Length: 334
View 1 (cartoon, rainbow, N blue to C red):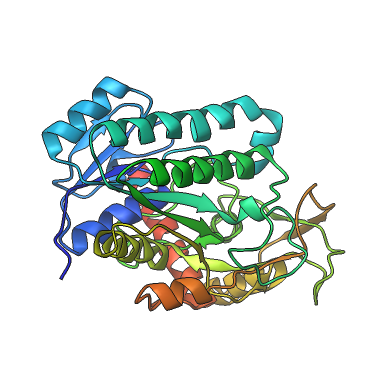
View 2: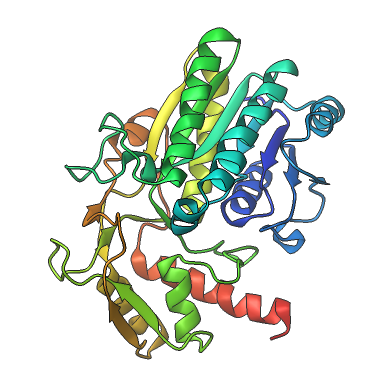
C-alpha cells in the first residue's frame, strides 16, 4: 500500500487539473492547489482543498507552499493549451508552458520534492506517419504548443538524471467528458474541444458546429481522433504517482488514450443520438497541421499501471459532458 504523501496540483482549478484533484481526494491523498485563476474556477474545487491563488513562476510562494504543506509530489497542469493561439503568439506559450515549468521544476528540486507528474500531449508527435502512435514515434511538433511541452519533457529527463527526482510525462490524446457526478467539467468560455462545442450547440448555446476538413484520408473524410474520458485520465495520474513512489529510480513517459479513433462526424452523430436532436454542421476547409488520424498505442500504460478505464465509451463521454454543460448553465444562472 502506497503511503499517501501531500501533492501539489498546479492549475488545479482548471479542466483536467480539477478532475485530478477529485481523483486524489477521492482516493485519500492530501492535496493542495496553486492556480492563478486566469482560466480556472474556484467552483471547480471541492470543499476543504487549500487553494493558493498565485503563479507557478513565483519562487517565494512555491517555497512557502512546499514548506507549509510538506509537499512531496507535484502534478503539473498549469499552462496554455490552444494550438492556433500558440502559432499566433509563440512567446506566450514558451513563457507559460516552458519557462514557467522550468521555474516550477527548479523550486521542486530546491525543496527536495522527489516526484513530478507532467501533463504532456500527443502534439509532441506532430503529424505522425503511422497511427496508432507509440511513445517511441518521432517527436516532431509542428506548433509552439507541442514544442513547448516537449521542451518541458526534455528538462524533466535531464533533471531526473542530475537529482534525486523521478517523473512521469503523460501524453494526452483528446480529453473529453466531465466528472460522472457533475462536480466539475470543461468550463472555459469559447473552448475549442469538439465534444464541448457539440454539446453547447445541442443545448442552443452555439448556432452550429464547424467541421474543419472533409478530405482527410479517413473513412468519412473527417479527422479521426482518440477521445479519452477526463476521469479515466485523472485516475491514470493517481496510478502514475503510486508507481513513481514505488520505484523512485524510474521515470515514465506514457500515452493516455483508449487506442480507438472516432471521426468528427461520428462524434457529432453520437451527440445527436444522446440529445435526440440534430446539430447544424458547417463544412469548412481543413486547418493547417491537422493530421488525418491521431490514435494512441496505449500498450505501455496498460503494461505499466493497473489502469482499467471505466468510461471508454463515446456515448458515455457525451452524456457526462452534456450533464456538466447543463450544470454549468445553473452555476452561471444563464
